[in-house]
Amino acid sequence: MTNMKKIICLISILGLLTCNLYAQDHCGKCKRSGALNLTDKEYMALADSIHKVAISFDTHVDTPTYTLHPEGRYTVAKGQVSFELMKQGGQDGAFFAIYLDQGPWQNSKSLDSAYQWCHGELQMWKDYVNNSHSDKAGIAYSTDDVYRLKKEGKRIVVLCIENGYPVRTLEDLDEFAKMGVKYITLSHNTPNQICDGSRYPNTYYWYPKTGHGLSPFGEKVVERMQQLGIMVDVSHISSESLVDVLKIIKAPVLASHSSCKALKPSQTRNLTDDEIRAIAAVDGVIQVGTGRFFLSDDLPYYKVGVEVLANHIDHIKNLVGYRHVGLGTDFDGGGGVIGLDNSSQMKNLTVELLKRGWTVEELIAFWGGNLLRVWKACEDYAAQFK
Image 1 (cartoon, helix red, strand yellow):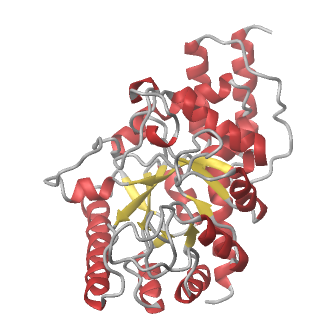
Image 2 (cartoon, rainbow, N blue to C red; image 1 turned 45 degrees about the vertical axis):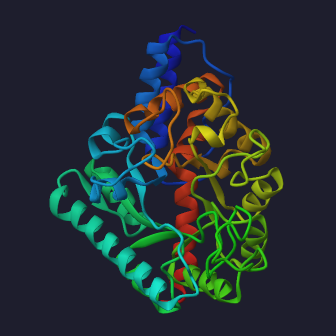
């Protein structure tokens, strides 16, 4: 079979899959045959076709901070994400995070300030999308909205909060859910009122030890989040916190931007193989981050390319299967590797995975199918509490 015939054959498979685009388990028409022997141009043509069919998501970008506050001083690359760049890269949607630095969590004034700031940032970001860019993008409040916006050809915006610091009460969760928040990262590296973070406790003088896991309040937060259909994000939390979360959850969880400790052991934020297996065991998904420092010890960082990122993705696939892995770049927050340094370059990763023998079915699951499965499961669980 000639190379072009291989492409035509695979694109015809894409046509068969289009009618079943939203199903998570396909009928098996797409068989693994190993990596194709194509030219770079032919690989990119195939990647283009895949991205037209798949619903492709990046589950973590820090773009709102930079967009809403361009005057800030930033230590990492910014401007990696825009609706136009997403369109160029064949990327349909992203989870746009409202990020909060951790402050004193036993001080009610600090908690009130964190809540008010987060609430305001969420509203400003919603206004930015709805009032200034409604011709290019729309906010998805449900998985049904995702499919509708995909058909309309608009970029899909999903709201999320990185760090549970602004959650003072369970009623705050109800308000965030009404605003459209679809996941909350329970903590950001260091302890808060919900749980311990992935770094050692007492990093800052105002943090008492929390027992390294979920607090009693944190257990109630996780329970209420799932009742509201807010996905529980376990990136950045401690190993003890993850164990506690997995003991009490009723619906799948996600790690919105985490990499593999087996390939980069020195990063406390990365997940161990046992943690990856535990998340997969509850039908969750690990979205691999692209921050160079979390992927490789190679210095300088410009040596870290898409191949290194793909190694982490393949590690999870080989460990627990393709149904439990996706992408959460952390763009505009420290993410990016050579060849995938902004949203316009997403297809380069698809090409790399095709060269490694990934099938069309697996790539459709990787780019969004797995995430949508988890999201829908959380919606279904929450439906019984409405």
